[in-house]
Length: 297
Image (cartoon, rainbow, N blue to C red):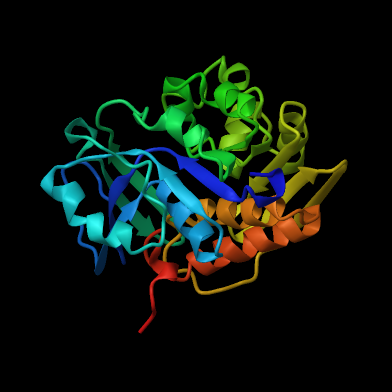
């Protein structure tokens, strides 16, 4: 299969069952109870959300992940199957679940409480990289790369391009080997908090410039303010369109999908960033990372 017909993205990471609590009057505190006015239960995790948004564009997107066989995981299986993803590389394993994330969303921001299960490496990893249609590997969280230190080098050896979203992890964001482990990444996709933590810079443009020394392309997500991009010897910043924000969960992963889809089609820097911001903006107008992909009432 020629490079021009290789269009599929492999999205690598963990699948979570997301419980999204919205409409909080206050965030929880130890010893106190608060109540949410709304709740959404949806499959989540950056790998799944990015793959789902890619599939919605018509781009082949294969989920490369382990998935539990416990009752909670299986309760979401039907919804995952409805997202239009290629599931041929989904590694179904009892020890892979349940993986759960509780999301508490308030005033346009959110807090997370998550539980990981087992290791991150799917048994199907090598087979996935040998898939003739695969053009790109997206690694949805640095925690997965930390466990699978060969992921980037193996993908590059098979002729795939690679993107990485660091996805905040308190225990790993300060890893002194972060840039060494992430070497070879073509597209780096942090949010502002992650970029500042990795560079020690408080200014978005300064953080972008420092990250660009390590990665050929850096798309820095800046929430409601839009995003910044260093690509093709240029740096640009574009705003996001003001909209009513329902839930920001997964908006960064939707942004990733928009950027990757445009970039893989050969779009220039401005079009890549415009497409990415539009995808993230659509996402925040529904609850849950894949909520905007479901038919609205």
